[in-house]
Image (cartoon, rainbow, N blue to C red; front, side, top):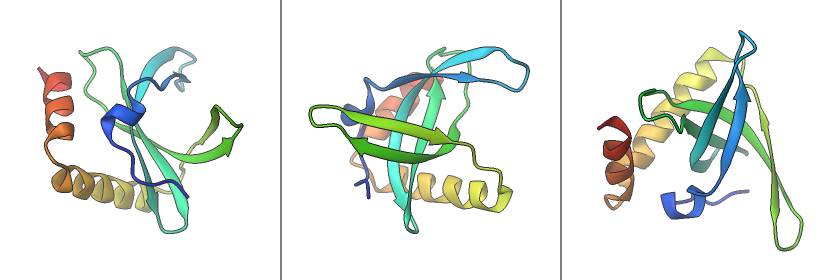
Length: 107
């Protein structure tokens, strides 16, 4: 399982997400965390004008010097609400790094 990762560990992880309308959006992984027995990732668009956070299931495979990530959609609305709560708690417990990151994003 993943340990909760801080912003410095995830700032280089960029992925392109395909939206329902077929367009793509570039996102940065801002947090990887455990909930229950599973790993999850919180992503936000790299476009500073978009203030969204997306949650995905996450599978990680260690390939030696690199780690391969596979994201999966979460269809359960109750689980998404729970993940948002866990994410909020993680942000409340941080040492200010997340606040600085999120404030930069929202400015």
